[in-house]
Image (cartoon, rainbow, N blue to C red; front, side):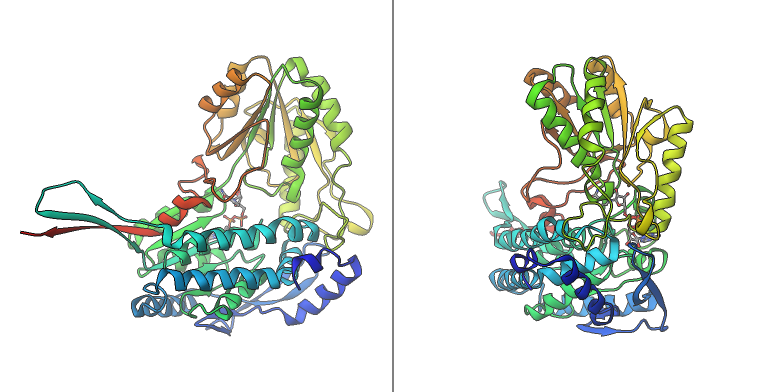
Length: 509
Ligand code: NAD
């Protein structure tokens, strides 16, 4: 079912479909175009965070399965069936793939919802449309890549060619299961690489289905394979493999650092990393009226959307003392009930559970720590009660009176928890915003464009927004400074990062 029809489904329709998915979804490894068990028969339970029930049992891939997939990918790459396919043929397959994702949008949306608890209305309205756009964008780019001819001696033709890299391993997180996977596998495939995806173990279902759709669209089975499993096993085996030429990782900074270790201890494969964030949003003293209201509303969505499980979430609000009290008052009035916990299969619900109970416990501990370090709990700070208590829910939470070195201002909570820090000047705001190991996304809110420009120049991050947050399109590079990563997703440069350049020197005389 496509997204237009999906938008009309009711809560009970989605519940019925979710029940059917328990048995119909593929949960085994997608290797060489077939769904297969793990070599050692290993499995693990896929838990639904809504109520802690077992969704289904997934194959647990390990080194032997990665070895098998890499051998198939390597042979496919060498055969040229994908790597040397005429660009417009490759493009046509990718467009067909995007169409199939669109036609199966409802099923893919449901898979991520049951796997990680994201509200179905967000999957239908945001994630899946962005997935389709991602595949279409990189399809469009395929024959727009060029090499160059460099300026050199009269009797020499010096050219630079772009070539696919070979076998590329992609490791994805669970917070936007399909979208984050597609931000990696789409440019990798568009560039002609044989690609192996290791999804997050919490959310493999949509990744399996999308790989199956790639083959249905005409993609060779060796060009895209999916091997799920634990990070330390399947993920590590992929990142250490001697025949994998690039590893493209999205996930935590802690695990991201390991990718460099694995690369250095194996074959020096290229490593591209998209990691954590602790996004500062700065609210200047001149804010008032409609702009202040819009700033507050955007700040609320910037932290509570997707239960705060967004790498670029605006989790640190740095507010000038002149407007601090009115800002906090408005945030409480507008934000306290803007997101309410509920069954994510209900299209009216905008706040599902966190991905698992471990995350729930970690986030609640962070709130306790924030309060013990002097923060003031304005609202939230608890699990959901009543019918929802079996789920991994955390209600929207606001903490004021935070200092920039407090734990809640430094560590990524990855939950619906916002920390407010009061400042007395622009200098102080800039210093605090930059006092972080992360540098993914930030913003400033002000009517003063000279001031805004100063923030644009001073804040260390890969994406910076003025009077806005969480906007952008496929043309914009997405990726961090500092320990938020070393690469860019989306954008044309992302496609280029999945190619090698070869300098070719023709001596003509
Ligand atoms: P994670 O680091 O725990 O896991 C990410 C992936 O790495 C998973 O597939 C996991 O199985 C795998 N993995 C774990 N240990 C591994 C190991 N030793 N070797 C190889 N692979 C291993 O992260 P997560 O909890 O899935 O995702 C949340 C994190 O992702 C947050 O820090 C968030 O900020 C970050 N993130 C960043 C971006 C971005 O674009 N910068 C986007 C989304 C999420």
